[in-house]
Length: 313
Length: 262
Image (tube, rainbow over all chains, first blue to last red):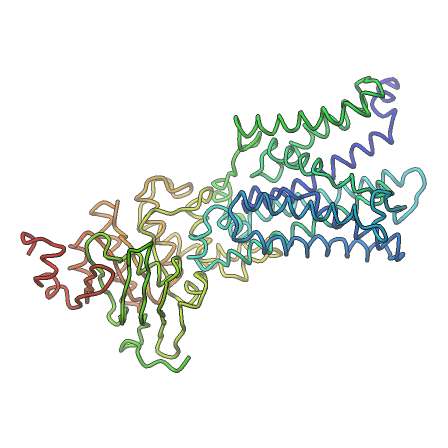
């Protein structure tokens, strides 16, 4: 029994960090679900909105000694403002235009952070950022519990949105804009609003990621994180709130936790070949799912179930 | 704008069109100097294919942008330039249109679609995630009334046939309680029985104060339902009058009906 325990939890630091990553992807995936799966906004710039929050948090903590809550609030606002601007820009674009514009937002954020030196530290990095509390060896674990709580809250909100008039407005906006307009629905405002709201959430998750890594680098904001989030969501089911969770467990959970911890790969492979191979597999998986099961493992929304439950809402 | 003086007697809202033009390439589709719609409770709009009927309706709703001209809603107490408003604002003012080509929301059930139509802006805020109960309690009975009147194969699920989607489109619009309802071939794809039901429903709504402007190729519907008929050809309304006058007019017979129709 002891041997099994040691095998499973013998490297708690790696396990905890892997679970941090998993929770981060799940959280971002749930927010992307509201954008893409519900409202039909294909955001290919997740890393940008997340990174805006991450670096806002870091800059305020490192350079201005701002307290945790205020820095987190600013990170949330940074994501939200960037989301509102992006939402306004993409509101009248077609699907291809939305993908290109959101990718451009992420690229701008990345290049701004990388090229700026005084505040972001550029390629040298920015740090250090500490947890807002210290309870000794269990601080990591406590932070993980907080991340679980935040992710759970996001999942709960997404599920409630599906059962609310707001969710119905988002679905209508995503599926037939002219028809939604003809029913008095302010489509542009709705798109700007959902982009601001969900990007604020991405910014907040970025802020919460700061204390985990302690030191921020632009390389943390590459397209890889966006690809991970999209792969998880599309694999799990972009139209379902649980889709991001299922997909993240099967991708990040498998690669960043199970294989890294429990498959005895040589260190050199783990450090060099593994991350590249992971991205290649994620990309191939994305193509495979889009070709053969475009709505992912969980499939389409089940609105008829909601109708059956209307008497109980 | 100034206080209105062009609304119909009895307080019905009217739509006043001035200098409205629309061209696609070098083809002028709509070219109307002056036209008032909605002065009578039910007004038919007929004409040959390509006369510009559907485009005129789309220009009123601003789902297609006009090249020139103004469209003004006069509800008796005020005038609003519809030609400067976004489509959703026009619908908010009570000018609503059904669709000629079947339209639906993929993924939304019949109930979803109807609840969407009735939900107010304050119900659809991101923080109002427990608002569904209120909307269902406020409008559920009215929606159920429509679903009891019109038969759907799966009322708890999705609209399947083109006819069901057409009906759903009409019910959505009626739930908005429009002042002026623009109907673009509302009975296309519907059985005779359902067509009769639809016309009866519309008569009830008209009696309650709603005005109807209807484009319809089933001329029996036009002759039997309309108080006034506008005849369009080559982008302009060239004749107006009661159904019997229009039906017998030589121009209409020549350009549209054919000599065997009268």
